[in-house]
Image (cartoon, rainbow, N blue to C red; front, side, top):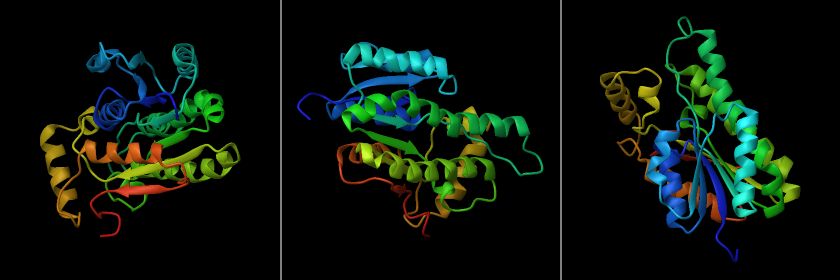
Amino acid sequence: MSEAPVGVVTGAGSGIGRAAAERLLADGARIAGWDRRAESLSWLDGTPDAITEAVDVTDAEQVSAAAAAVGERWGRVDFVVNSAGIFLVGPVAEVAPEAVRTLFDVNVVGTTVVTQALLPMLVASRGAVVNLSSTVGLRASATNAHYAASKAAVAHLTRCWALELAPHRVRVNALAPGPIGTEIYTSAGMDPDAVRALLERRAADIPLGRVGTTAEVALWISRLIADEWVTGQVIAVDGGMSVG
């Protein structure tokens, strides 16, 4: 590609989304960072190759307007990283139905809404979609079943979209990270001690003996955008947890 690629990263204000945006900027890409909270994107202020937008990924009008702004600024979109997501933990007997609806609205519907809005530009550029699934979307979990189900849905959407969009030479892949210490847990209402205990339990199940980092996931996001002969894959970046 002769000119710097252009991409959208959702959830760019923190966690994996921020790490992905940082990595892709370092790779020479131009980034539109989207996040529900405008203040979380302040780290991109003054970055010449970045624009930011406060976007609720479940709101089709907001997403369409933000997508149009990217097109007006750079005239193209070469990739999207669907990193925006929320977490839910709790046994089936206690989980509130409304919380489950919100979970799927963000993790599954939001991923769909963003991809739909950017699809014409992705088709024009023969671009790439990278979705964020999870190891628990590949391997059953007894403590966060609904979150796991939402991420399993993202994994299967990835495979199906890869087949659907292959004739347009649009590649669709996903990463399935293992446990990583990000704000997603506290945003779900867990207190720091509970988060620490959860990550310690998860680390005990990981063959490589530790939780991961956002930078390790961002590396693979970069690779999946760059590699033009990989599609339909859900790659576990989890220290071996999915096979341990």
